[in-house]
Image 1 (cartoon, rainbow, N blue to C red):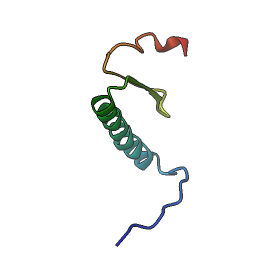
Image 2 (tube, rainbow, N blue to C red):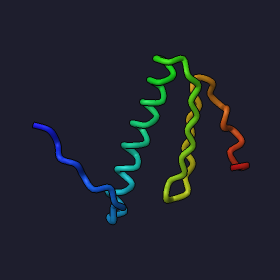
Image 3 (cartoon, rainbow, N blue to C red):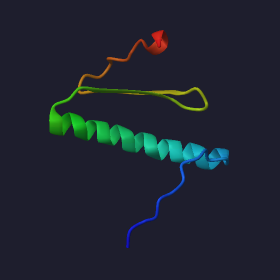
Image 4 (cartoon, rainbow, N blue to C red):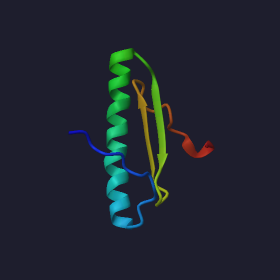
Amino acid sequence: MARGKIQIKKIENQTNRQVTYSKRRNGLFKKAHELTVLCDARVSIIMISSTQKLHESSLPVPGVCEDSTEI
């Protein structure tokens, strides 16, 4: 049995929103890594959370986004 579609809207509960952000961030970084391995692609991701914490990933060359203050 297939899952039904969910409506995309802001999660009002701060704790649930942070947990969802963390899980989805990790999933996105994993997908980026898979893309680099499968397609020999270079991928960079920069994310800023609602608490203004910076998360970045540069694959396969780490450190491409070191000076992210220019963004």
